[in-house]
Picture 1 (tube, rainbow, N blue to C red):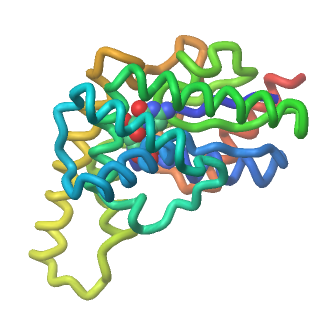
Picture 2 (picture 1 turned 180 degrees about the vertical axis):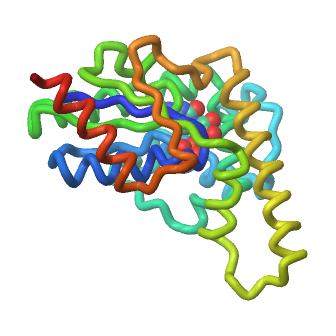
Length: 223
Ligand code: C5P
């Protein structure tokens, strides 16, 4: 079974994908990590996070893609960094880079189908561009406020004073809106719900509840 999961940053699509991967014993690819890897390697080389993506920068990114290992990338704190996330989302607007990263994703799908008869991919354009014929598609959302709260909980230690927490919350909310704006409004492969995707708003749900909703849909689809 091939499962496509798309959604906004911090919506819980990664959590759902990992849980489904374990439950259904299917290989999982977090496609965002491919964009983050290019972003991080570019940052390492150029020591900056803003680019106008001219010919030379695109050439450099292609060299990065060709000379680095993009298989089984572990999402460490460097890749998780918000600046790298935002740069990844800028890189996501560059057609040539998408074409290279799309080929990697298709290879992962083909290999997984041979080995495990299926897989799970999560990202922004999975149900629309990468896997238009997926057996089942999910579109995961949550309100920006809930996503900012989740990020705050994940990244900030609990000893902050209330006014510091409020300040961090506002910072995360700003970042989330900035990234949504990039992802929804870019010309190439924007984040979009495929017409045949099931939407799950995770704002008021636990990860287990989200998993149960998804599993029910998957089982219904199978029978
Ligand atoms: O999912 P994650 O937040 O790690 O993705 C980082 C960025 O990479 C996203 O904001 C998005 O712009 C880009 N991306 C993409 N297409 C995908 C996955 C991620 O454009 N399939």
